[in-house]
Length: 421
Ligand code: TGC
Ligand code: FAD
Picture 1 (cartoon, helix red, strand yellow):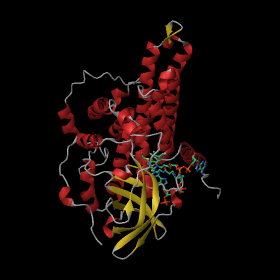
Picture 2 (cartoon, rainbow, N blue to C red; picture 1 turned 135 degrees about the horizontal axis):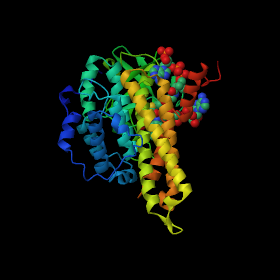
Picture 3 (cartoon, rainbow, N blue to C red; picture 1 turned 120 degrees about the vertical axis):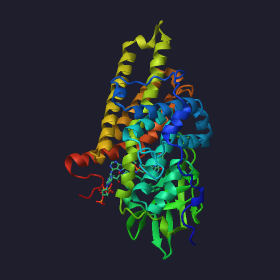
Picture 4 (cartoon, rainbow, N blue to C red; picture 1 turned 90 degrees about the vertical axis):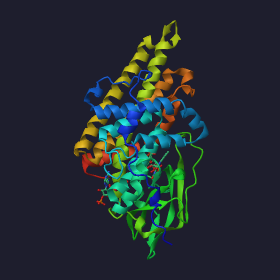
């Protein structure tokens, strides 16, 4: 058995760059009602390129995601049009350079995540997984052949990727994973299962982490590989417009050229998580901005006791808290983005931003629901959807408390994940 990499003849060279798609979409934004909360004028710190990319994605979210997201959630689907659009906009794998990738700044990548998650966390999830968790490991740890083969078509959205690290019995501690690869001479044999895998069922390829001779290695599994299946998980009350799946490997045969040669050990998957967690720190700001805007508008128009509820001190206190926390979260994300761009970051910086920004976004969503009263439970408003989504975002990419413990280890020098010293 040796079918090797996906058919190279399907590669489209010179796919759409974000500049070209921006030009095609035009500059007329006069019909846009959305006014982003930007109390400290972060806008003034952005380059023209960063603002243009942000505006392009903002425009797309307003026109494509917001009018259709409730239907997508009701149907439990990630619309294929969104995959095509994201590919055409040229923003998948945003900060990666070469191999048909956009090569944008980390600030631009953050802004993209912010706008996508303002629409829905599931849309940001799709882009995070594609760019940071599937394209990045191939870009950083793949062979030249693998990079040339997969990356251009992943950047254009033609191929969808997923990332298999979590297992049914190993979530926060992936180091104990049981999925195994065996070297069978002219192929690898994979056995085991992954769970909670975003994009799994719709993916053309999966970057799967498994132990080979006791050492964690990355493998590229293609959807038609014998012994591989990716059944969809159902019954979610959160991220309903995102596809979540199991990955099952039963004597799954992988050609030898599909191992990622450039990394061994947990730092492989964790390096990918650095970028995805960074994107979430911006994405959470987008979800919080969406809740804030809806709440401000609602509070100004809802009359109780003969006055707009926005005139009551308790409501103003809550709005003021939201403004304060969103502004702090924006500054955190922006400064971290600068550190990503100049290479002075450490993983603990990312843990702090992911943990803080998701935490305040979730609290803002809960507070927004309260201020919307009974209306807050309706799908006419984005609030409950963001709230339910953010419950997942708090758990994936390292739970809130795992990031607390990463920071605790940084402060004290003592790791407290296990009971052993
Ligand atoms: P530990 O001893 O800390 O580290 C093992 C090796 O990994 C290296 N490392 C890192 N390298 C790069 N970046 C990082 N952030 C790294 N963190 C650790 C470390 O230097 C070491 O390398 P070496 O060469 O010395 O071996 O490992 P541990 O087993 O004690 O892990 C500790 C802990 C709890 C922090 C870690 O396991 C953890 O982060 N757990 C959380 C698991 C997690 O985040 N899973 C995410 C799954 S993917 C997902 O959720 C996608 S959702 C996507 C979406 O839909 O948006
Ligand atoms: P557990 O690890 O069982 O944790 C349960 C609770 O115990 C948490 O509160 C946790 O903080 C706490 N806990 C655990 N260990 C400790 C400790 N040492 N000290 C104190 N508290 C502790 N994974 C992928 O690989 N790829 C994906 O694409 C992906 N997508 C996902 C999409 C969704 C919608 C969701 C919900 C999850 C996804 N995940 C994915 C899995 C996600 O990364 C895991 O759910 C997460 O890492 C937590 O693992 P767990 O759910 O097994 O919780």
